[in-house]
Image 1 (cartoon, rainbow, N blue to C red):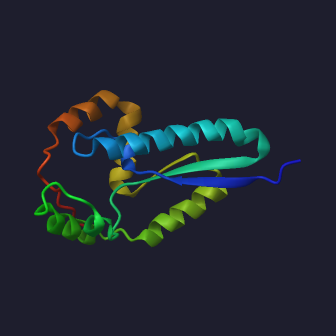
Image 2 (image 1 turned 120 degrees about the horizontal axis):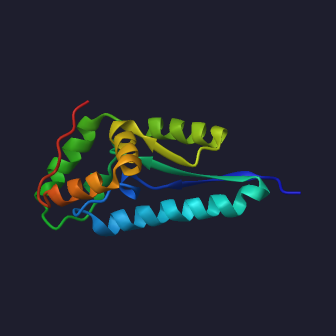
Length: 143
């Protein structure tokens, strides 16, 4: 008899939205999503659920602590995440709900949900958007 449990892996919108801006990050998040899918299949018979959390942009200090090839981008990135206004406690609420519901893939916030939907509906469109992204521009986010 197995006691059960739940594994939560923290990925990102990047798990299903390709970008030429952060290829290593994107690949690592896609790999984590795939690992989560595999674990879910492997552990389902033991009563162990697996959720992979895929937020878009969250207002954390990550931009201030990242390494940049152009240090001039740091300030813009920090301001953009601060303006985003999506606090980590909202991510925590999604995690609790995902565990309760045994939800496998958990896209959250607007960009996460749109990215996930596009990855399911039209992966080709997402690849096209990835080619359009500029390597030197930091997007501006509103509330």
